[in-house]
Amino acid sequence: MDLLLKIDFNKLDPPIAYGNKIMLIGSCFTEHIGNALAEVKFSVLQNPNGILFGPDSVCKSLLSYIENKKYTQDDFFQLNEVWNSWQHHSRYSNINADDAVRIINESQQQAHDFLKNADWLIITLGSSFSYRLTQNANLGSESISNRVANCHRAPANWFEKDLLTIDETSLMLEDCLKRLKAFNPNLKFIFTVSPVRHIRDGVVENNRSKARLIEAVHFITTKFESAYYFPAYELVIDVLRDYRFYDIDLVHPNYPATEFVLEKFADSCIDENSRDLMQEVKKIVIARKHKAFQPATKAHQQFLMAHFEKAKELQLKYPFMNLGDEISYFSQT
Image (cartoon, rainbow, N blue to C red; front, side, top):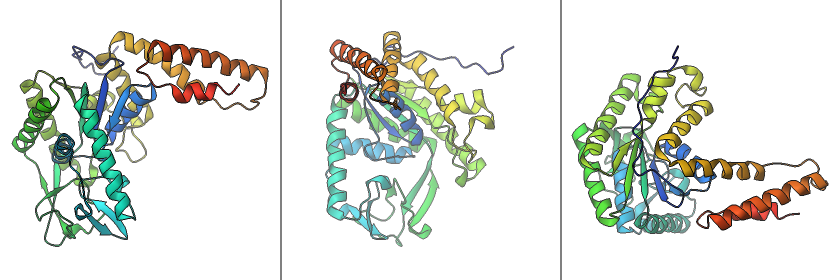
């Protein structure tokens, strides 16, 4: 008897392979995928603006990478002694304005250079809700009614909240992808919708928000041959559909749920040879995390030597893979 609802997966053609450069952008669920790929040594760059939830902020950020936008202190505002950018996650905020500008511009340059030669862009959208600045806001260089990517816990009366329509989102994404393809004609896209529910918006409102994202994304995947949809949202909401697969907040998928989605992602989006290599790399990575109780023993030295040779062999065979940290660790014999 089947205990899980089946979902048909259309495998990517061509699939992701080692040696591909992969940029990831969007909600916190993006980082689950990005961290998993980075751990097994895929070439990834994730969230150069930090976590972003809405299609408006995702598109605005991607266009800024194409243009290699340079920020100045005028683009920042100070709140509670910290300098923030309306277009960046608070991980880029800093008590020193010059440092905040420098760090963001370094990230911009890295994103521009990476995107120019990337093979894949994975976009995870989280919410259709958008926030605009009002006349009460401490603006920086942003104009009233400009949409922001992050509210930085500023007073609620600094913002007006609205729900993007399907047409608005579709047009944003379509224009963004056209400009991305002009910038990098070889770029391919994978869209996902985050299964993390934005309960603060309300249960009914969250479902409306997700439905609009799903409809807009499917419009885009029919419009662009190089755009694909991976059903991360459906895997959690429709296949697992049990609170055992959620964290204590009943909103975020827990570790088993995330691993389930990542396994399906690998099966449908990554080529077979790369999946086999992932298992070899994973063994090296796990061994690197091993903490020896008695590091001076002959057994531990043999363990280090065996994995040093294996890591060196993989590095020589796959020069695009960076196993420098592992090789350095295992060389401590």
